[in-house]
Length: 114
Ligand code: 5GP
Image (cartoon, rainbow, N blue to C red; front, side):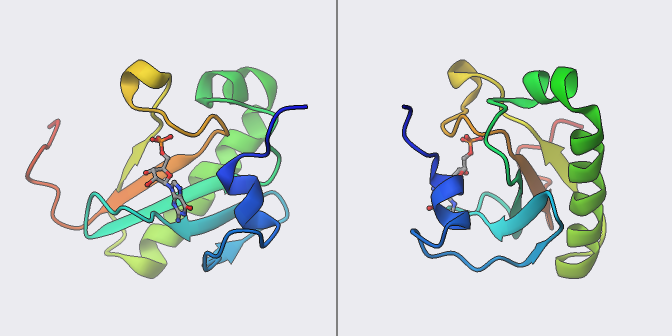
């Protein structure tokens, strides 16, 4: 059996984190190492999908729910504008292989892709 991910352990209450909001399928926490003034993580409760490509193929409705939850969380905790990032693969910086979206908001001028 594989080890539960850090996010599963947070959901179980084994690792402390404030759950800012949740739906039946998704929950939101603050990233422990924020990379922007607003840095949230939107995470499915199920750990079946390693990354966004697996999720998109396996459960597109859940991916759409993550985007909707990200929008609401960015409105509630930030200005409403946000960047949504899915690191995909260790070469792209993914460290937790339980799919999650980074919601980045605030002053993103530094390191901007745009
Ligand atoms: P990845 O690098 O896989 O895209 O993103 C994983 C994110 O999870 C990182 O930004 C990291 O800071 C965050 N993270 C790792 N462990 C914890 C934790 O225990 N609590 C919280 N809130 N975030 C965590």
